[in-house]
Picture 1 (cartoon, rainbow, N blue to C red):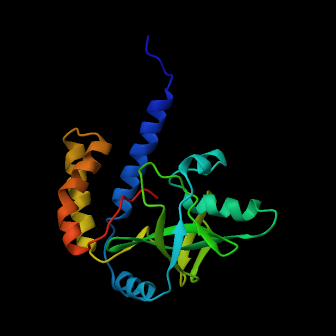
Picture 2: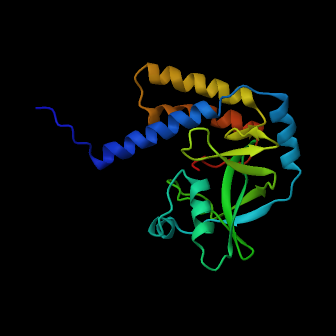
Picture 3: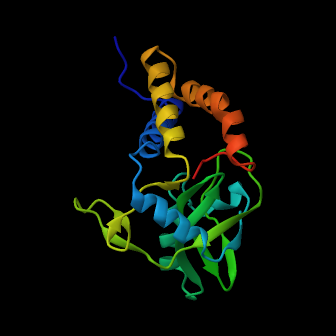
Length: 206
């Protein structure tokens, strides 16, 4: 008899696979003049230093991995003292700027999204006051806009790199490689090339 029961580990693996596929595709969108000009505009904005609390603390208060915007919106909404401010902007990830949310609590900046890898306790972040949130067309959540235009996951300096990485990833998937292993292989293959383009990178696990 075939069991229909899904174990916790299988559920987590499925969720992780979906996250990997989604990120690979969302980072490989077609380049545009708008992306290039917006990248330069955002890079000229002031930056702040954001602190990462211990993962255990974040999980204990109900923060979810890979859900930064909802985490920060919930913190601001549930802060009875009104000291928490949800701030959207850009996480500096090598040559890319990744759409991200943090909170400003009384002048201190925090990332409330638990990470599955060991990362530095502080990082540079670019607040962007032009980002606004609108209810999605199907009513299932909120979508980010800037200047009336829907925002992609990232602003990329080298879009062609992400397109090639996506193609290599999909080729490995077609060959039967698991999503996690395919991601790790592609990252390893491109690590040296990316380091030559930009000297500082850390894992992208928002």
